[in-house]
Image (cartoon, rainbow, N blue to C red; front, side, top):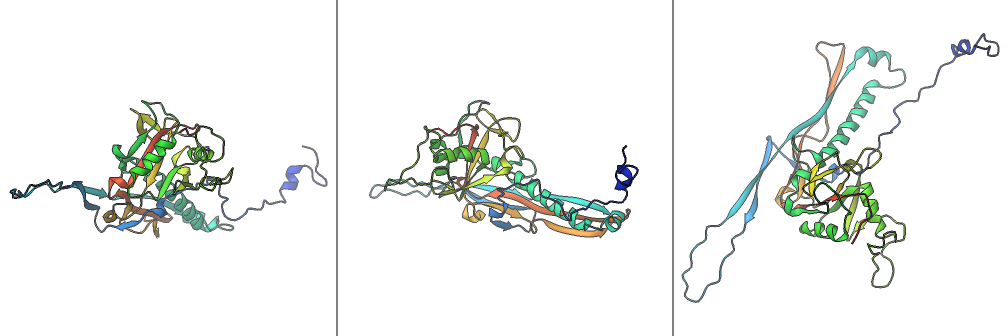
Length: 325
């Protein structure tokens, strides 16, 4: 190695230097579009929440004068159970690392911050896709509330008509239209003059409803919510699979879905979160019994629920192509 100034070589000079370490961790895994904060919370004191939903209403009948009336026996209910699931993570921190490696960073604070972020991001995804521990949105929505644009295992373009019909299935009105960024970008095109098969809306005074190039903030009068939790991480590529024309799996395919959601307490018939404790409760840190260190947990007891089936609608099987009429 050649000499470096007064030093025999560069390695000798580097013995007298020290890199500067910035405090904290630079955020790189950035996801937006979470909906957990939008859910109303229903506190549950037991392991599950039970409520009754209308099934069939009494219909009555026409009568002539002097007819004999017969009492009907047709009150019909469906009992629904939303069962809490336990979700969280535990971390162990060795005291040697915590005490000797902390000259620049508080190790416990770093581990807690990273764990909290990771647990929340995973739960944002699971309230949409979970099918085992609890029922996420894809497993809560009913067939009657679904508009499918695909056929068999092959997706197709989302349609203006399909989106409108899906939103009209949500009664009395959806609070949000939820979908991945790339599918929402296709909705943007319908007001940007890019796609000739989906017309730009023109108001009665002849002026465009939105400025050319502006992102769609509402579809009709329903706020649009763009989510990073419904497509491939970082790239946003569609990955849902359809079978028999409708959603079947979170990954393995090339389609995406839109949800129309009406939030509300179960007695109001809305989509809600049943919860048995505070959201993302931190337990500890406590001293480990058999290790030189401490442990803590971040946990929650939680499950999405749906009062009325009419509070949730889905359009599935959409591919990453322009929306058509």
